[in-house]
Image 1 (cartoon, rainbow, N blue to C red):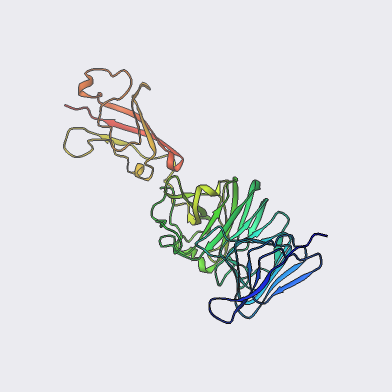
Image 2 (cartoon, rainbow, N blue to C red):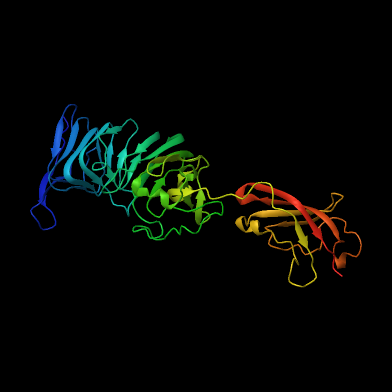
Length: 383
């Protein structure tokens, strides 16, 4: 029979009387076996083929650390304060949150309570959940049992395929001044179609599979600071590529100003740094920008075609046609450039003097707002 050597050492930590179970060999909980931790665990050996129950119990904080992640089948957390994970703990079956939070470092997303393929959990609540990062392996759907010290703030993830790995943490912080990020996420830096962005909270979600999410708000979310209409609430994300807040959904928020749910469209989590609540903003009145007078005579009034609404959509295009339908002007990202001169088409009569007086037809595409407008302008030719 092959011998397996197990080194179990009880050592003092940090110069105080706290002891720790130090595994430097090969430790295993067999089927129907139970192992209760009333002291810290330092795992530098093999501790990953467990079949029974492991529990963390006590009135003090219990630390789990070491160079090697531990994998439990069934694990329960019943501490008065918290169980602190300084290295990842995997769960292959049932996680039971009884009392006390499971803390992971918010400045290190690689450490988490990780739920493996067939695992599940129960008992989560405001005082017993993951305060930090929770993660999944080989799952396509989950509800991350995350929050801060005082409240459970879950995020529901539904992916189009199985995630080899995905993780999530909740931050009860202002995105403009996050405590554990090297950069800030300016809530005034956003695509023009958005209204206000929450400064009360955000989630960090990592994963490379196209997914949808659901996040819920409560009284502490202070949605009334964003809008008085909860149907305008949507998930928004800080785009890594654009360096600004963008919409993650067009579905209307469900609920009231105190409690509700926002649902996203499909997106890839890894494309965004963090996620929070925003509003869809107030769109322009549809299909009518009015008619304009253009008199390019240098008097400072109506010298160019100025459409104020285009400021809300820098990503735009303006086309102008004469009364015969001939396109005489085209400009992408238009900013007051049309002053009576043509940029396309067969220009009639003295092109150096500009287009002749008359009525012209325009179309304005506001791509940022997914809107299209049309109208007329009267051009008084140069003298």
